[in-house]
Length: 402
Image (cartoon, rainbow, N blue to C red; front, side):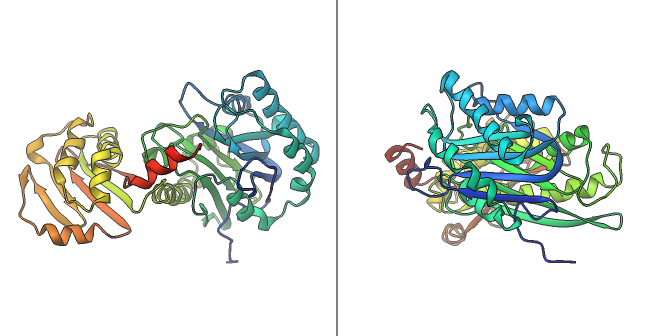
């Protein structure tokens, strides 16, 4: 099996590129283009914030029409939110400029944007650089695109996996950005998934929604939900596998597992790269009455500012964890509650345990902090991802416009 690059262009038939269009104050690349060489079935999950970007409305409309996509155009440095009619026209112009270069319809080009809210988009650089952006498309451009969509991110977020459907190799790739304004209720960030599997529109949407619910929708950094959150899936069929028409088809389950795997990698990467974060926090809840309750409890713990501060200060304060579970809305008997922190049992069936605070505090200095909560109410489980809360987060979001 050939070595597959860990990028969004790993699946067959995808190319990408990025250029500097003058949208980021840093002068770094800020305009990315991801292209499928053949029309791709598309699915998407978007922010539920009522104050959202026009591109979110536009992408929803394109997907609702069931038309395939050829490209995704992404700019970073300006969210183009709350910019009025001019902002809407600018988004449409961006799609048209890309379509002209690709010889396709503007309705085959999705647009995603991230950055500062309420500032008009500077279109001059976008117009000027579009020919170079399209002209430099290649398979190696996946990493360039992943770099260009970053804002306050400090590291690249990309991954790829291979799987077998029947006798054929199928590939899945992904790139994402996100480090702040991250909170469940999809999509929590910008994320673009590619595959060379063939999917019907309905199967693609069902698969993406299921994968997001288990991964991206369980990430929380700061409790703020973005105006531009977008997760898109493109499936171009270039692997020549039989089309997956529904979840009952044999190829659906392995493809779902692969998409879930790359999205879990993105969820972990986003949480670990939270603004000012020094530690990734994973919260695993078991013994819930149902999956919904397990997710409620896991999100509450991962999102608790008091828990975040305790992790940052290496304070084994299990009471904050128990309190978060208690207000989460999950059904459970407090007398059955168990809490484990870094493999040390702190609370067992509602009874505090003797432990060495110094040893647990030292263990909390690891790059990843693991919290396990057993509710004792059933068999359901869920995992959420978060990070600690540091003074650096306040500095980033008070000293600079992000």
